[in-house]
Image (tube, rainbow, N blue to C red; front, side):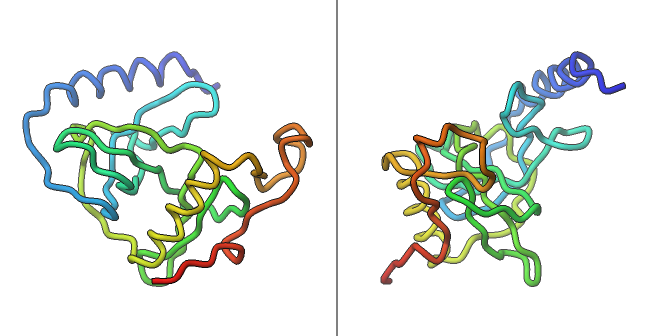
Length: 162
């Protein structure tokens, strides 16, 4: 049986080691890193493996020590909460827009890629719409109250001129 308390205890051990990290990692917007994102609660995205890791896209660098990031998944999903793109040739990734949050640079493990400029512009527009526009819809019916969902924004709906 899966024991959430055990996973949280294991993550606490990794987190304490991570907090003591002294190394500085250079990073910038559009970079994608493996991060120790942890074992979280509720619907928050968890990391995997013994380092509780997941790829994360750097959306906005605030300082050398913190940034706004979005966890990624290889599970393809549609809807206003997600954005699909390719940064590894032949493999689509999904940015879990609804999981955006502040991260410490102490969580970095290894840089694994970079999102292209056009996809990044489209992703930021979709993220802005999710946060500040009143109309959004997840990919599955019934996951939010019907009154909050009058249309679904897909990648085809996003038009950006560069």
